[in-house]
Image 1 (cartoon, rainbow, N blue to C red):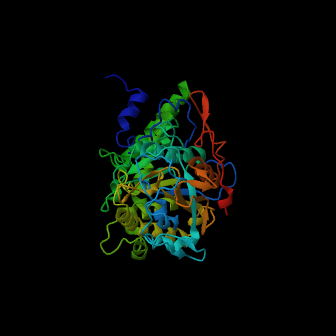
Image 2: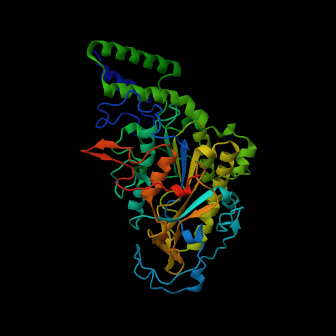
Image 3: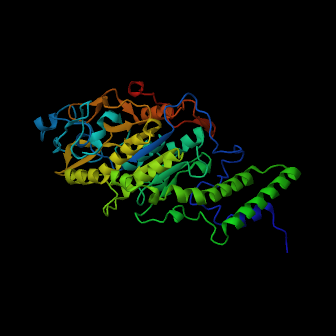
Length: 467
């Protein structure tokens, strides 16, 4: 019987442990030729950080700015008209006259920040929100705009920002994935939205599609080796480590195999840590009530918001929560009713998250980002719809060292195009990195003959919104 090589042994022993449901937890062989000793070890920031984590509430499909956080009373005055100032602004589809929002915008909190009536619970946290009303991006199409918001590039060529954060800062908890994405199904572009691309594979996002009745023991598929007990797995890994030590003494270390063993060790640790982190039975009834998760409420988005709090509490660096599969906020028709329904589906969970983070002292160190890949036109499409709008849209930030109760920048009087303090997606990324302690111009990775950045060759930190 031929002897097994160390590589063969790792391949055979890796079943279960080596396939933990993270597409990139095993080292990417093309990138990890000379990996760091511990690619997930915490690393010092470039400068003192104001935040440690980010929770991105992704309203995929593109919510309408004039129906959410950017009221435009002039739309009622010019209803049905097409003023010359916007006549030449092209979007994906043809639009006609201006269409006012049917929603009221009460002034909320001590700051008096106007927030649409469709978000009554989020409105209670107006004094914590920093609304950027002057966002813009490059193309009015979902796929490239999703890539831009996630990776700073219009094509599926660059790592996602969550991968960049792990690369730049490491993780505070090596027993859990450092970058977790929760979405019921898949958004447009699928897993490419959280890809590591040319960064080491261990930095790829971990996608979870959890039903409301999920079993915390099986959250991460393939995490456990079904053929071995926990004690047997531990002995197996210890044996492999001894083989590694002997190999290193005789022939030197093998970086690829060392990385593979590290991923197996990580999977073993996760068997316990993941089960604990995702066990919502540990939460009190009062906490679940804050998120609207009592009385038979089976809202997946609210559940994911509660899980996000548990994850950042345990040191996970980046969490993304998508509003739903596909592009739910893509309201080419029936805009008003859909926005009311979509806001109702997310309002309680977002407000619960903000309340919970504040109550636990986590909001100061956690950036909460709300928004889509672009906005929607103030002009009508098909009677009761709104088209994509890359010319101007809004996002908001809370916590993480951002000023609250303020609106930054402005679109034109109709909400079509960003005009005052125009803010590109690269500027948003640069600012988020800054608050997390990273200089976007220094966070680089050498690939294919050049240094790459999340912000490419652009981006400026928006210092006016920093507390």
